[in-house]
Amino acid sequence: MRLVIQRVSEASVTIEGNVKGKIGAGLLILLGIEEADTTDDIDWLAQKAVNMRIFPDAEGKMNLCVKEIQGSILLISQFTLHASTKKGNRPSFIKAARPEQAIPLYEAAIRKFSAELGMPLQTGEFGADMKVALINDGPVTITIDSRNRE
Image 1 (tube, rainbow, N blue to C red):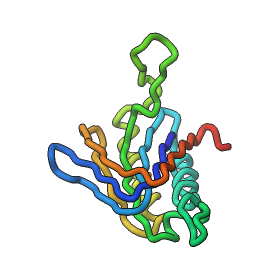
Image 2 (image 1 turned 45 degrees about the horizontal axis):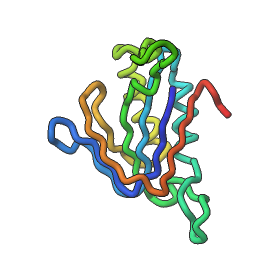
Image 3 (image 1 turned 90 degrees about the horizontal axis):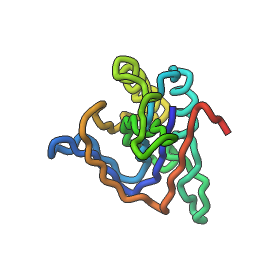
């Protein structure tokens, strides 16, 4: 399971002209689910992302997590995070989980991230054509892969 975490001052997701989710200060998290992923990956990633100290404290040092600033999370599923670019110029998405496996894991991720944060999340819609807008604060962008727990 892969995450792209962006510290944002605001972010939104629009589907067919309608705003589905919108946040102020917090995290925009893109979530890629792979065939081998389980709820153990979700548990580890949710705890890691929600408690990651990437927000500035009073001295401007990255010392606070999203909970400590009372920020929000916008969680978007994105199968393209598992693109393989080994051969040719057209990415392969063979490692990305099929919807019948990915949807229950995405729904479990929404519940787990929400529990870790202590409030409901804003989300996109699995499989929809989404337009994501954000103002990356910093910019701060961090990637995490549950298969490579550094």
